[in-house]
Structure formats: C-alpha cells, structure tokens
Image 1 (spheres, rainbow, N blue to C red):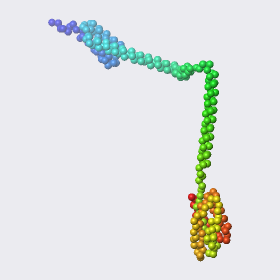
Image 2 (image 1 turned 180 degrees about the horizontal axis):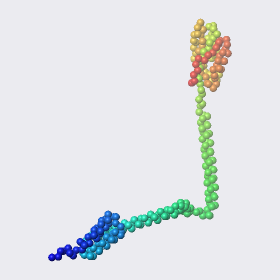
Image 3 (image 1 turned 90 degrees about the vertical axis):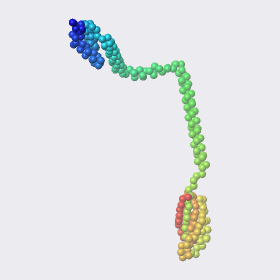
Image 4 (image 1 turned 90 degrees about the horizontal axis):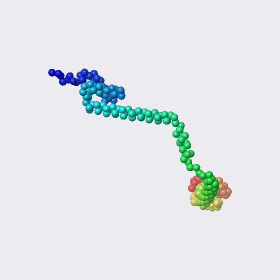
Length: 248
C-alpha cells in the first residue's frame, strides 16, 4: 500500500521552506531588504507550484506587509528629497530673504502724486505757524506763573529773627540810685528793641545790680549797640554784661 505522503513535495523541498521561513521572519522584524522579500515570495511560489499550494492567509499577509514596507520606504524617500531641496534652497539664497525684506517696504509704500508737492509745502508752512503760536503761548503762560509766584512771595510776611537778651548793669557803688539807673537804661530806644521785666540782684556790701530783659530783632539790634548805649550813662553805670542770649 502506497504512503499518502508520496505525493507531497514538502519533504523534498525542506531547505527551501526553511529559507523562505527565515526570510519571512526578517520581513516581520523589519530587517529584510527588498531583494529578500522578492526572493521569499519566489521561493514560496516555486514550492507551491511544484506540488500543492501555500496557505492563502500567509500569502496575503506577506503581500500586505510588502505593500506597507514599500509605502514606508516611499515616504522616507520623499522626506529625504524634501529636506535636501530645503537645505539647497537655504544655501543658495541665504541673502535673498534680507534683500527681499528690505525691498518689500519700498515696493508696498504708496507713492504720492507729483501734483501734491505744492500742497505739502503749504501744509509745512501752516504747521510751522502753529508751532510758533504754541511756543509763544507757552512762554506767556510761564511768564504769568513766574509773576504770580513772585507776587505771592512778596505778599507773604517774611520771618523776622528775634532774640531774648538778659543784661546785668552794675553801678559804681551803693550810693547809686538804682531807680534812676533803670530809667536811664529804658531810655535807650531804637527800631527793633523792646524792653521787658527787670529786678535788682544783691552783690554785697549793700550794692545791687540791675538785671533787665529785652527782645531785639537780630538784623537791627546787637549786643554791642546795647552795651555802648547803656555805658554812655557813665555817672550811673560801671559795666554791662550779657547774662543770657536766646534765639526766639
């Protein structure tokens, strides 16, 4: 009785099947070259043509993967070509964009008709006149503000510096009439001088000295003037001393 496997050629083409299987695995892994894919399909066709047919599902899968790989290869090739063209364009025309950008404003800028030249001159003169009027108006306002400031400052009372002075007036002896001495001191009068309170202070041996206060305007009355004016009454006054001097 004959064996059923006598009509199957797969046993006699084992090496071809194994090689086709190896190529198929490379195709699945994405490492197969286009030549290997073609040879793999040819091996399968040769084997199936010699005795039987390969499974339809495997053939369809191989063809589908072949188409996908070809599509990916075409896309990569197109991308490479696009990049090469772009690099070449950049290398050739590196100065072109700047030139075109500089030329663009000039190209898009509208030109004025030659007939408007006279109008432009008239406008310039008109604007110049406005500038002169504005400058004159600013000067006038500034002068008014300065005058108002000076008037306000002049109307404001100036601060008068004053001082409070206490003087000690010493007589010659205990026989000097201290009331008459004080009267002589108060007779000293001038603008910016105002006499205040006074008192007698014992010195010793029945002698008293006069302490008298006055308020003076610093710009008008000084201590030198007071000392000279009081010591002028030499029949009553021996000396004059400044006991206190305080700014008010």
